[in-house]
Image (cartoon, rainbow, N blue to C red):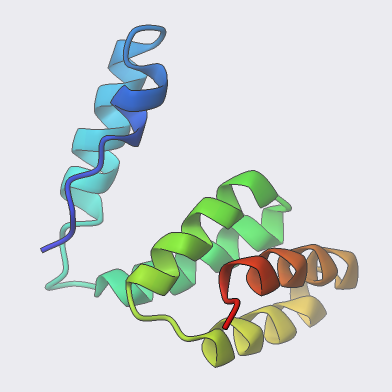
Amino acid sequence: MAKKQTAGRDNLGEFAPQFAALNDDVLFGQVWAKEDELSARDRSLITCSALMAQGLFPQLKSHMVIAQQNGVTKDEMVALITHLAFYAGWPKAWSAFALAKEIYQD
C-alpha cells in the first residue's frame, strides 16, 4: 500500500481546501491506490511520461522522486526520457535529463 499523500493539505490546505482534499484523497488516495489495476511503479512511469510530454517540469521533478521510491531505476528513467525525446521533443528530453541526473545521483 502506498504512503498516505498529504502534499495537497500541506501546501494548499488553508488556501484551497477542496482542491487539497481532492488531490490527497481522490487522486492519490483512490486512483493511485488501485494497485490491482496498475502498480505504483507503472503509474509512475505513465505519470512521468505525461508530465514530460507536456513540459511540466516542476511536477515532473516531484514525480521522478516518487518514481524512484516506487522502484523505477535510473536506467529505466533514462530509457523513458530517450524514448519520449522522439515523441515529445528533444528540448523536453534535455530538461528531463537535468532533473533525472539530480534525482538519480549515485
